[in-house]
Image (cartoon, rainbow, N blue to C red; front, side, top):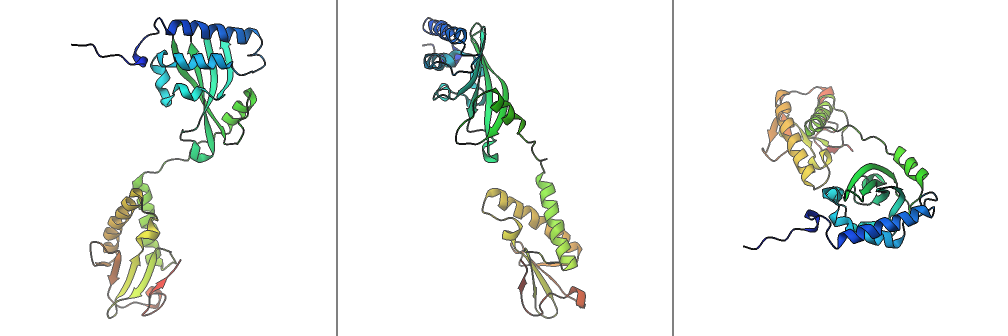
Length: 259
């Protein structure tokens, strides 16, 4: 039985990788001794190429946030610093959860050339701009601009507020874009709820929200004396009995849509 081959991420640096690590360290030390770190200069291209080659052998930490060696190229490494044996740098990521908020995600990585490990040590964000500002001040300013997220609301809370809002429009006859009044047969009055006004869109989230609102309306409208017309699909309800002036629909005998 043949032994399965191990992936690069599962192997320790061998005869080929260890010389590359030594060359990487020599390149970084030459760059730092020449004042590159003090002047905030980018890493030499040779050092970046060697870092990409040895990245798959730097332990399990290199897999965090789906980091890959190719993302280190094209001058994306910023603010490199050398504190032997640790090489630290910032990099801008373009696929994080902050993209929709108009921000790029920033990550600080630290490579230990003695222990052959890499770890994600810090994160931040900065506004999306055409040219990426470089330097320590730009990263600190962008990190401070990361605003806290709004508190999350459960689906039950969202559905409850929608049902209460619709019932208030029915009881008070207040204008609502999702409520339509009409006259049924005889003295019956009808009210219809437009599902597309309750939860716009065709996504699964919108469909599930409509179903939750419909279930809540059936129970609450029955308590108010309204009967559902054409169940279970319809969102039209009817109530018979004398209606006073305050409870009459906006237009007798016709359908009126408010919105």
